[in-house]
Length: 277
Image: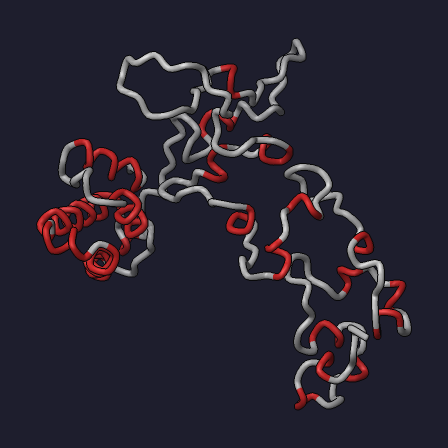
């Protein structure tokens, strides 16, 4: 079975889906990758998701080109019905295509840096072994000669752990890769630390460890930070990375379990106990 993005590409190339509808590939693929309990619910979902997007985001386009929007919905239904069978719990993810390596491990099942020949040669994971890496640059007509680009071939620099990450771990079939660190690492974008650059704390580029000592910025720890055994604790005993703020009672009760029934109706411990001095 084809993953949604490949099926949508074919539908667009065959003019079943208009290529001039704004954001049409993203909208249709996003609708297709949702897991629905039945075909009926899926068909309803496509109608709702795709039509609502154009009705709300591009009302003039929806009004003028409603037939194209309906055709995109019909194509989504066709793609879904030939690749997803809810009653059998089978879909385009059930049987992986290991030709290539974009959506599934594919070539990297052997080219993993671990398979070693008797001669000692290791099957490399280096992209350039098989690929001539493309250059990124401005759009140009086919056949036009363009000056060389200094931009890296991949939109994000593949360094550190990312250099060792398989393509399929980000480019999972049918799903777009995450846009930023927060999305990939499941960090709340509204968390206090997200106003800072990752490199402000993470010393090694694109590696979780080591991190800069908290005291580099927080040299003066006020209030109850200096009371009892608190000065001897690691910051992360109480503060969760990226979020940092301590709320509720659970964090404190992990150590102070003798206070389980103390003032439990009054909310967070920090409402009464001052850590800020």
